[in-house]
Image (cartoon, rainbow, N blue to C red; front, top):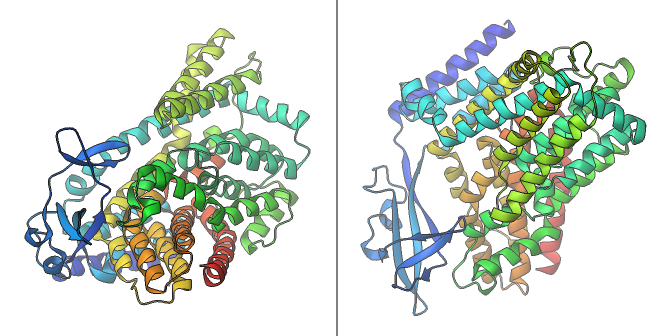
Length: 574
């Protein structure tokens, strides 16, 4: 069967199955229970801290709750409300929970993500693959008006607007201006003369920048990718190599050098009633930092990229090895059938006649970008990336004008920059849409329910790792996985530690916590529908699926080593 016909048949079968599921299979409802660390203000009103801000609520006794889990869990009837706060008495003390009604379609909940990933894998065409997954999820949710009920609501959010502003206009515009002024090429030549002596030192620069930009996620991938790409291209480093280094020193290093937004976000999900070392926000932040030495996947991932940078890898996947040989021997940075996300408009320089590039045209905008991102993080607790990229773009434009470049050439460079990243921006928007669809179909909730509490304690960290890997891979988000997994994982870890009479329950819970952190990071990194995966490919000029296929073997070795470490530590010390 011709490849095109085969792919079309797979797509049609997936769509038909999704429509049948949506039409005939009723969703199963469940109740997610989150124990709250509750405070009282001067007027006696109850509240808890969520994302750094007080969230007020009124509670009813759990016996009177409309979302009482004993009545809702496993039901096929839609509950009257979706959220409720309840009080209950435990050991003579009144405690509080947030109840959230969630639903899933069993294994069918995973279908949208499976369709998207499968089509990405076999077609290497992410736009149609993501659209296929979105359509599959919409049919399961019985939303037949794909534009009005799915695409428009998703693309009209502030999150989507931020992507268009940041990654299309600001990032694309900055890259386009750098290409027009020759700033990126001037930077590459400057680094080559003073620091870079070949592929090893060029990759080591990329690795070191990944460590320095430890904010993680999209900020790190964009900064490192755009900074190092001209150097790497000059030294014939394949785009697959560079994308792997950029991606695997983003989120992993953010969990190791966690002076960023991660601890404040995660701590809200790990309160467990009755556990003294998780009692207050300060306790939970301290617990996060204590877990850093046990985030074994992050350690092995960062170590793996370092060893690849100095070309002493412990393990090298076949495709990545072939990519390295191809680029060194032929100078071909992409595979023959690759479709890089960075368009030809951003490949190399397009400097007007008579204009002389200067390395400061790269350093000053980049320095302003980093300073503003870090400065706003220190002041407000969150980096204002829009300000950082916007001011960097203005500085780049101002310097070009001051040096005599015409406004027409600057606008042409800006246009080229937008054209160069438009495909990546579209893929990012679709990835956000399918992530929301996957969350609504309840794939993560279903996977969480499959984990029972009658398991040997020493394999619980690995089970949590596998669970979060699956959730993050199918949804394309590590932070979204934390919100789903931690409310189950931490109480479960405490219950297992208590039931087995472990002598070091805090250490055991630390291992389980680290497994959730790292499993989510792995799944996010390796998912073709993740924003960081897309951005790593876009900012290094790599084909999306080539990046995914060459990163998974290395990341999986790191994940396997981490699983062994968690099991050994849990068995012998907890």
